[in-house]
Image (cartoon, rainbow, N blue to C red):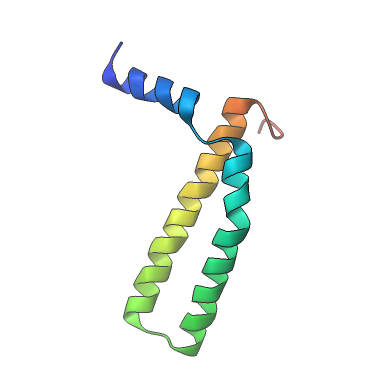
Length: 78
């Protein structure tokens, strides 16, 4: 078994559940919304960079949820 196969096996066995990942979505959305509002009030280069990084993190979190849905056989299967 290769290292990549071992890592993939552990991810399947010990990855966060759909419920765990889904429960993070509202807080993440509120944090992103707050940052967007702050950026509107006081637009700065640094604030743009931070928000962009957090949006990328949110994107990755949604994709992890998608993977968990597929792994657990949940969702609509698309």
